[in-house]
Length: 323
Image (cartoon, rainbow, N blue to C red):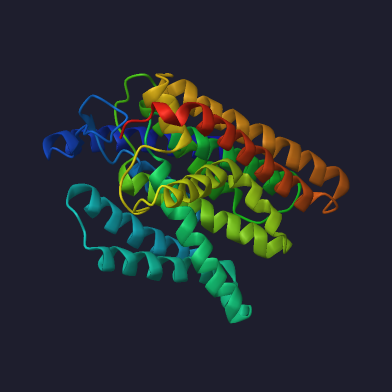
């Protein structure tokens, strides 16, 4: 019966995304290339809406386990989808994000902890969601990287500590797989759009927050270390260049690889996926054997190694950057 439920979810997700393609095509919801784009072809935008429907499918089929998270996800997906169609004022978008995160944190149990935890969580969650959105620039990177993160969470949830509904986690993974079929390819059928990158980031932050609260172990942030190092190092680099860090750019390491070095998008995305999988695998193996003894040492070592790689790469290839 359980396998049949997942089959129903897959069929539902495929029908949903194919229906969305028809809607997006009819209403001209597209992503046009510009001088800062890493793609050269007009492509449908907003295919990442399927991530929201992955959560919705699990809620309808297995029951609503996290009602406030679902409301928050609905709000943030809605405002992000509107932003994909027409520009939304920053204060309105941020208001929706703030309310959505508070609702999410309620289902994480953060309101029962000292207020400082809530403030720090809001800052970190805002940073992660924005970083995820900024990193969504080439075919396959959002879907591929998300699969690496969610796969590690699935292992942790089943073999280390139970922190989230397995049905919800599997349904989200299925939605990412369906999305990857249309995006993780040389000629993408669709892009995630803000609705996709923001929604999957929101989902991952929710799950990661529940994991950290359950274990009281912040080192689980290592599950996002590749994106984290790329994003933070890029911000520092742009500050050194005296640039406006809120302005669109093509200075992420993956963008230099794709645009200046002409490495195919799918290869760059696969590289990010594999590096995160390797780091996460080492981490969960060590945690399984030694419990919490080496958690933070692994986290700091990963940050240091990735930062050194970033610096060496930029010193050698950033000179090729023109925009």
